[in-house]
Length: 404
Image (cartoon, rainbow, N blue to C red):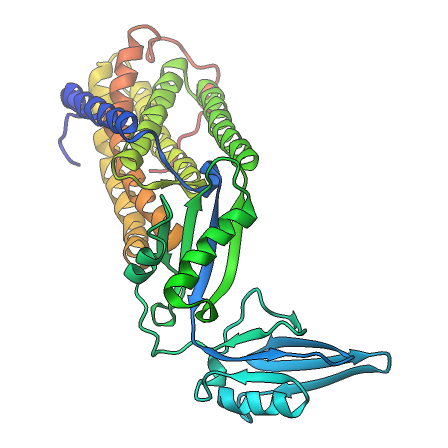
């Protein structure tokens, strides 16, 4: 058992926490608030791929014509009063873009070929499929390892859009990216989409940009989502206060709640100082850390109660310090084991997963720190007003403790 008197360092740990939280507040004021994602800030995100154009297809016949993709197989359907006529172009029979272009042309479609040597297995699908063919040309693009597009290129492309954020998605060699922008004024989805598409088209060429997915969050929805998230955290705090008040005593409950508020403030300060994006993922990380930290705190408090019960008349200071030392190894092993699983996600992950992992790493460290140093010190403080060793519990014979 580690011989560490955590209560001896209470002034030092409280000073560190206060300074860190104050630093977060200063950065918050100077930077003008959180770096809000589109979840809470209202905005538009678009996932796209830069892929060479193989050919364009148009159709002016009397029948309805639809082009779709299934398992890397291009499917053409003609519909009229007599039924459906279907033509499939599998990779095995049409390995190159030129092969498919010739076959479509032979069926009466107007085909304008740009590149005949692109592999059919790399056919790109997006918002364009299934597509009802008309006199307006439909673009058919193919991804290729020859496309040398970096994230810096995309950032240069959207440099004219204030606050635009870019990240890589999917396989790195397929030139797939996501652009996220915050809306300006009363800007709607169409205006935001046009701004992004125009910037990308001017840089990469309109024919080479394929939109894979887009998301739009309006101001009203983002505001409602923020209120719901804050309400979820508040409800969690209230339920925790009630549970610990019943399960233990008021001193433990107050200490737990203040320690959890400390964890949340430390987490938000970390996010503000590093200018990490605040989104639904951040709220998920906060709620996860609340549960983790609370569980560890309850284990320690349960050990405190057990030691006080088994050592009647002993000094409360010594019992609290002893309980933390007895639980320290468990806390360290639990934290390190979880970090072993989370750290790789923060290194090799991307997007929301990477952001969640980074938040969780800090939260795990702070959760272990607060449950081992902050919460015990708070118990000693509230013990002066609500003694934890003088009031008998109603059913001591039925009390149970968490397994260490």
